[in-house]
Length: 259
Image (cartoon, rainbow, N blue to C red; front, top):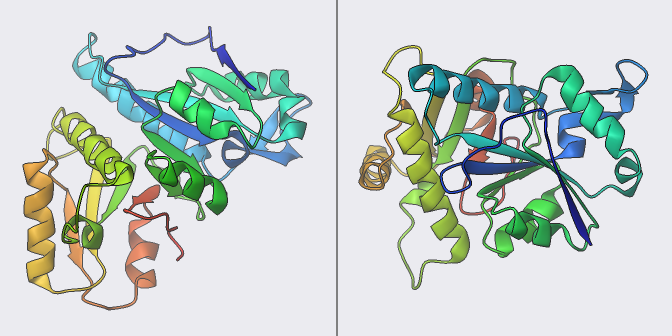
């Protein structure tokens, strides 16, 4: 069974234009750590939500009528947390997080909750959840490393997935990735080269400069230009990842920042 509660504390986004991002509650809040009597502690995804909110704020500063905004949904599948729904809502209010809806479902029904809420990106600390969502055509990313607190949302794209040759019909997960990339590119174009609240980074793990160039041209054809591009050509990932510290990594399969 799926139950959704609209957050009356925030203005609801335009359902036809908003980019819906669902994040699991246990990624945002630490259920074992308290900050006050009725408030959860901050989890690994907390800086991510703040960065999404900052992008929205800047978009509205540029154009108060802007409708292309991030719409955040908190997904709760943990039975213990579901019994404390009021605590989740009060924690969100306490930290000033701009969450549009709170969705409560069983572990078996959480895919239904994603589809019902037209989620375009699902973020979780649970690899199995992310894999299940990806298999149902919902673009998913694993949050396995805390991002550095930053006012800039840093999104990393895997260039190897972008240049992978087509072997048949485009799978739903890849279609979802292309659609999300186009929306991300449209958002990025709202800002100038400097002082943007949104930074898009492309990294190719294998191949040389030619592979990186193909990935760049492919993304541009989809309406997405990147701020930075790195070609590792088989070099270890960890040094560049420790410097870039993205909020999440988008690939055609569910991998984490530490994989």
